[in-house]
Image (cartoon, rainbow, N blue to C red; front, side):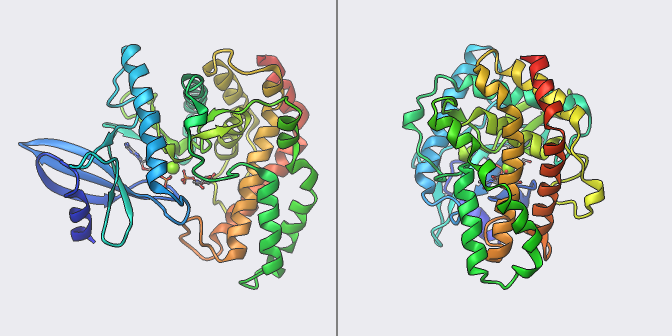
Amino acid sequence: MAEQIQKVLSNFGIEGDFVSAEPYGSGHINSTKYVVYNDNGKKKEYILQRINKNVFKEPARLMENYTAVTEFLRKIIIENGGDPDRETINVVKTKEGANFAIDEDGEYWRLILFVTDSLSFDKVERPEQFYDSAVAFGNFQYLLREYPAATLYETIVNFHNTPVRFANLMAAVKADKCARLAEVQAEVDFCVAREEFAGTLERAREAGELPLRVTHNDTKLNNILFDKATGKPVCVIDLDTIMPGYSVNDFGDSIRFGATTALEDEADLTKVNFDISLYELYVKGFIEGAKGGLTKKELELLPVGAIMMTFECGMRFLTDYLEGDTYFRTSRPGHNLDRARNQFKLVSDMEKRLPEMNAIVKKYM
Ligand code: ADP
Ligand code: GN1
Ligand code: MG
């Protein structure tokens, strides 16, 4: 493995000597390595990622989006007097000037600068951290408000089209190819009861009430890097799914992952509760970060976005469980089922508290 990694790294014109490459982070999709070089006594840090070809069908086109968006952000950061090597992802080109390398097995690899003295979190550690992450994601969307959406390739078609996700679940139920249906009938019934709800945002879009914007589409807390010293957000990462989408889904995905008392894969559901005070902090931060860029209807639909993303993600975990765990990385039997049940518990909590969730948004509108 180490040899293979060094061979991949030899495609990039990195100065200095190779020191180490270790698995890094807790993403479910790509394979991520923390890489260190020694350049005349100076430590140089990188992130090397193998792009998941099962998930991203055309990695070369994905990397065009990824590079163009990060170069766009780099310019704005420089104009604003920020640090462009830390506040956005920077793609390291190969010796031939490409933004990825392909190994002998046909796997695609990208190398990016490691954001120095940073770390990410799988769970909110301090309420203020969640508020700060909301400002960062709201602001990220704001910075991309003038990005030419039509030039973006759709890296995953229908990524947050919840009715399509529902249909995929129904197909997996019908096929039941791993004979797991009997075990999850209650969860399937839970989803079927919400089929009408699944179409809420698509209907708003068709009615011209919900604009398509350039969105991140994977706004969980561990896709923000925080500065080790100040504890403040430095950089929004995981830019594989930047595509036209709904602002309310970027809001909602953060709530799904962060406004809860447990990790996303906690199996003991008595520990899994929606945390409405974290929700309130995120509402406040996201609206501030978006700097008045959201319409009245978008603001009104923020709570729906939170329930939608949680419901959709639960359906995606359940679908993957029924299909034999081929999409999300798992590390124990039943991992995806635990995740699905966890998400559905949160959906139920949020449904009960929807009037309060709406009132909180009104307070900050
Ligand atoms: P995945 O799509 O698998 O989630 P990510 O791009 O989110 O992959 O990377 C996985 C983890 O690696 C992140 O959660 C973060 O901890 C770390 N990471 C990714 N890019 C960087 C970077 N440029 N600097 C520092 N850490 C990073
Ligand atoms: C995946 O790549 P990562 O781990 O940041 C997934 C998201 C899910 C999330 C659930 C491309 O995100 O859509 O919400 O897992 N990314 C992709 O934790 O499918
Ligand atoms: Mg990630």
